[in-house]
Length: 197
Image 1: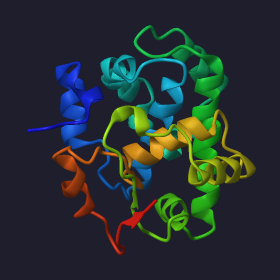
Image 2: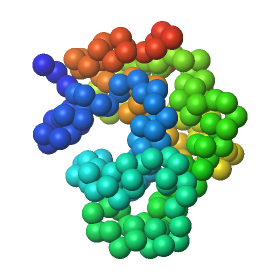
Image 3: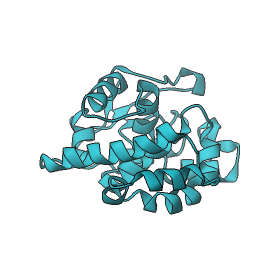
Image 4: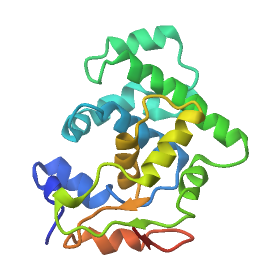
C-alpha cells in the first residue's frame, strides 16, 4: 500500500495521514482547532505538534471556540507556563483573537465551514502530483484566503500556514497520485465535486 512519503517517518504520522489528513472537514469546532494547530506548527515540524496534541487539547479546553474567545490575561499567563504546549505568546494570543474572529463570521449567519468552502464553491481542489517535491507550499487560493482572513481580524496567518491548513482539512487534495488515500478522500466531499488545479 503506497502512502505519501512524508507520512512514513513515524507511527503517529502514518496514522494521521491514513485517517485525518485530507479528509474534508465541515465542523466549525474542528476547523478552528486544526487552524490553531497549524498556526502553532509555524517554524516547527508537524511531528512536534502531533507529539503535543493531547497537551494542546487539555490546555486549550479542546479548542472550544466560545471558551477560547473569552480567555483572560490570567489564562494567557497559565498557558505560557505550560511546558506541554508551544509557549509562544503571539500564538497564544492569536488563538483568542482567531476564536473571536470565527464568532464574528458565525454572527453573520454563515458557519466558519461555509465561509472557508465558499472559496472553492464547495469543491475539493485536486492537486495532481507524482512526487513530494512537486507539491507547492502556497497557491492563489491560499493567498486569497490568507488575505481575507487577515481582513477579518485573524492573526498569525500567512499563505503557507493557510495552504497547509487547506490540505489538512480536505479543501485541497494533495495526496500524491500513487497514494491509496487519494481517491478515498474524494468520496467524502459534501455538496460538490472535486475540481482540478
